[in-house]
Image 1: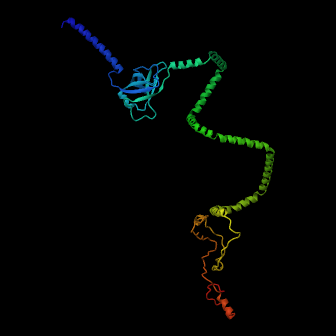
Image 2 (image 1 turned 60 degrees about the vertical axis):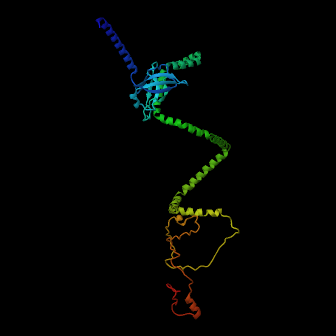
Image 3 (image 1 turned 180 degrees about the horizontal axis):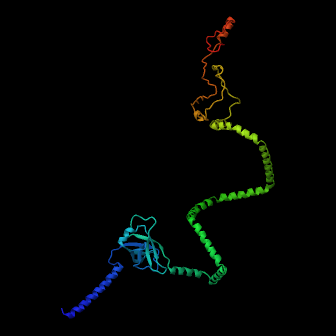
Length: 397
């Protein structure tokens, strides 16, 4: 090949290489040569400055970019994201999505926000997310401000601003002190915000309860009014009653003051009785409850008392000193043992043995005891010497 043809071919190859390098750099910058994972974000709106190739960030690190934006059938914005496959394992599937911008007039980008309770499962390919927040653009603020200004009369607005200016003129120090006091108040109330929030959450239930009881409360107020009117009408009687109460109190003070020491001694003497009554309060309760059936029992068919009597063998006669009476019983409450006050059918309360000097089973009398000595005297007359009653063991007679 001639030298005249080599030089043009070398220049053409150099130009082709340079163009290839430029296109390769552009492709590398746009990520055309890398693999991506598709993820869809649905938002009520995408914002004015949201364009394809916008960044997708999480914790300030880019994890993908916006591939395309389209409008949904119901007017929502559908953002198709191209995510970096290496970042997918670090993004939970319940991640929150915000569409925000770095400045008021800056371009929008998609920001992933980690939730408070992240899911252990990572974000999956083809998953659809919903945007919770979209930064308000300045034109929206201007639009709302324009709507407000259209609704306000400029003359009245000028008068209001002039009055406000006149009211604040010369009071800058007071206004500053007010702002300072408000700041200090908010600092004191800030630790109680959780309690305030809880009170606000419970307020509907409390107000509902008050609403349900409102008729009763109004009834109480009406009754209170009636009571007040009655007190006004009976003012003279109330004054007389209070004077009588004052006189009774004076008499009571005189009586109690005069008899203070006797009352004190009486209460001191009643302490053992009270202690004993307290110890046997269960028996007292049983006795009182045992009288209740008599109150509800029907009256008898005829007046009087029906008595059933029969003859039994006599008990052993009194002997000294073992039959002397004693007051030393310390059995304690026995209602549970006796199954009182209502004894079940077929149950016989056991005999309670106490230290009272009496025991019906100590010396039994098994039959009729005849005075044989008296019988001999009736038959044969008086006999000299001691009684000959060999059947009686112990004292003669």
